[in-house]
Structures are given as structure tokens and as C-alpha cells.
Length: 561
Picture 1 (cartoon, rainbow, N blue to C red):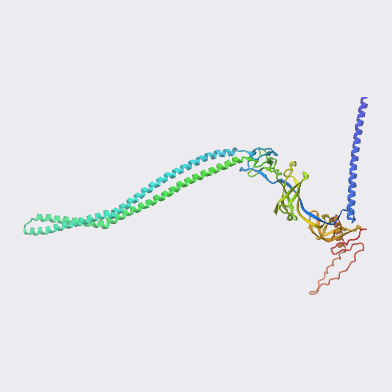
Picture 2: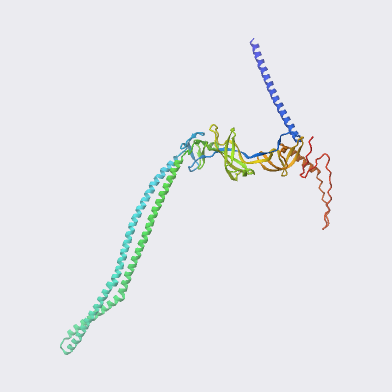
């Protein structure tokens, strides 16, 4: 009984498995049949269009107000995004703290901290150097004061020597020399007087000796005295001559030289004082420069110390400044190292947003500042925003593509609080660039072009579809203004592009078929001065089953049965 029950359960499981597989294969077959039928219907419809049938979408041409707009897709971003930038020097600035990404911070909150160990060490070294520089400056100032005192003393001594030298010169020239000269002259006069007196006595004594009234000894004594006075007078005369001719000149030269040397010594003392003063002042300037440099370095270190913390300058949600090409080891996190001027985080103002779009050069001239725009974010397609154009670039954006696009920024007026929009979301922007008023316009799908000419396909009341060349005017992204070639109320086909592909392709093939063959060049050379005869063109009648071409090389419209 146990084996029978187990066999029954096994059979039930196998049956359910088989039934399940049959059901799944049957559903898959039904799906394939439905897809095949859909493809069959689509192909038949396309074949009907290319065969020139009257089936397809149509539009009745009427005059209408046409609103022109430019539609582009762009990226949502904040109008005011604060960038947290590493202001520390170097390439190895280690992050020791950073708030988690996505955190909401307020103004003044600390977002990032960097390692300040090296900066603290440099601050201690510069503090010692600052004290040393202040000591050098004070020493240099004291040395300048000592040097000024020494300079004043040296100059005073030199000026005193000059004054004494000048007084010595004046004293000798106007005093000593005159006195010595007068003494010499007086001595000479006195000696001459005495000599004259003794000479007269000598003459009298000689007369008396001859008469025997005086002795010869007395005469010899008086002669000796006269000879002595003669020598004395001659000596005084020689001394006077030496004084006036030699000593006076020598003394004048000596005292004048001493005065001049003293004057030079004064100048030398003053020049030396100036040089020594400048030297002492240069030492002060050097010490002061060193002190200022050290203070500036201290200020820079203090600034670096302050930059070791980056604080929020506005409220917002923190987003790390990671790039797609960043290596995993280089991504922003605690323990990572960043370089100088590298972005660490972004702090967008989520209450003020904008959309940045790239507009093609063919329509950018339509866009002006302050134009209104409608914005739809892909994340909230049923909640459009309103905005206005704030900026239109003058230069095209850099790109490897040959297409020229210009950056346009559209400001979002307001965003409902319940919509959690984020920077980087994709949005579609429709900028209203004009209202052209009443004009005859057809949808853009009703117009096709060939060889820079515009064509439409018009259907009359009995279903005949004919191609017609028209003149178009202003064009929007939805409608084309028709200036000539179409009347109000006429019905146009909206599949002009597909019909044009068929018609223009057949016209080009027919043109190649009816073209006359090219004349073969004659190999024989023609005599000089004779023109090569040109054969008359032969007309080749077109076959009865081929269309007759118009001036544009296209077949004329014909009635569709």
C-alpha cells in the first residue's frame, strides 16, 4: 500500500510538470502569432503607402495661430552650487573627517577636516624663527644707535682738529711771523746802532792811541767789541733773511697742509659715518624683512590651519565631488588624499534650480533672454515647471562633433516642495520663441524636399493624390507656413516623406533610362583650324508605360483608380 501511494504521487507530479510545459509553450506560440500578425499589418500598410493609395493620415489646411517653440533636453542643476575646494598646498592632503554624502548641513557646519600635523610642526618652527628674527632686529637697531654716537664723536674730533689747524695757520701768519720778523728787525737795528756807536768810539780811540792818550790794549779791546757787534748784526740779518725767505714759507705750507688734511679728515669722518649708518640701516632692513617674511609665513600657516576645516557657506545637501573616471582609491572618503584646488564636495541650493541645454545653431538665434519656457523632468513627467531663459552663449560649446551647439540656461521659477528633484536629472525644455498669428500652415510631415524645392501631396474630393511644388515660409518644430501652392481647405497627406522617397527614386531611375548614349570620341586627329563635327541629337520616344517627366525631372501627377 505504501509503494502504491508513492507511485501515485510520482505520477501526479509528472503529469503537472507536463501540463505546465504545454501551457507555457502554448502561450509563447500565441505571442509569436500575435507579433507576426502585427508585423503583417504594418508591412501591408507601408506597401499601400508606397503603392500610392489614398490611405494614411491627412490634414485639412487652414489658417491658424502658430506658436513657435524650441524643444531640447538638458540636465537639471542648482543655480547656486557652492564648491568645497581644498585650499591646502601640495598633493597629499589627507581627509580625516567628512560628513556622509547626502547629509543636510546648515551654514557654518564643518563638512571636511584635513590632517594638520605637518602644519602644526611648521608653526612651531616658524614661531622659534620669529623670536630669533625679532632679536636680530632689536640688535640691529641698537647697533645703529651706537654707530650714530660714534659717528658724531668722530666728526666732532675731526672738526676740532680742523679748527685748531686753521687757528694755527692764522696765528702764525698773522701773529708769530710778524712778531718774529719785528724782533729780528729790532735786533738788527739795535745791533747796527751799537755797531755804529762802537765804530765811532774805535775811530776816536785810534786817534787817541796815536797821540799816546790811550793804550794799544784798549784799542784792541774796542776793536774786538766792534768785531763782535759786526758778527751779531750779520747774524741777525741772516736770521731775518732765513725767517722771511725760508721759515715763513715752510711754516705757511706746513700749517696750510695741516688745515687741508684736517678738512679732509672731517669729510672722511662724515663719509664714513654715512657709510656705517647705511650699513647699520641695511642690517635693520634685512632683519625687518626677515621678520616680516616670518610673520607672513606664520599668517599663511595660520590660513592653512584654518583651511584644514571646510565649513558650509550655505544650507544644502552634501554631494561628494567624485568623477566617473576616478579610480576607486581616489574617490572622496575619510583617509583619501586630495591635491590643492581639487573639488571635495558640492553643496547645491536645492530651492533654486536651472536647466542647462545645448541648442543647435539652426534655431539658437530664435532664443532671447527672458523668454518663457516649460520644463518637464523625466522623473516627474506629469508635473511641468515654468521657467525663463537666463543666458544664451555667444560661442559654441567645444565638441568633437561637426554639429555646432550653443549653451542655453533656463531658470526654474519654482518647484513644489513635494517633488524631490535632484541635480543631474534629465529634463525636457520647451522654450516659447514666438507667436506668428494667422497663417496658412500644415504639419511638418506634410512637406518633403528634393533638390532644394519643397513639395506636398494634395488629395482632392474623389481621392486623387497629386504632388505639388510649394513655397514655404516660417518653420516651427511642428508646422510649416505655406506661402504659395496651397489653398485653405485643401487636404494634404502627412506621409510626404515616404511618398517622396518612392516618387523621386522612380524619377531618377526613369531619367537614367531615357538619357541618350554618350557620343564616342573620334580617334583620328582633326586638321588644325577645323572644328570637329557634332552629330545631331536623336530623339528617343519614351515608352508608353513610362511616366512623362516635368521640368524638375519628376513624373506628372496622375489619377489613382
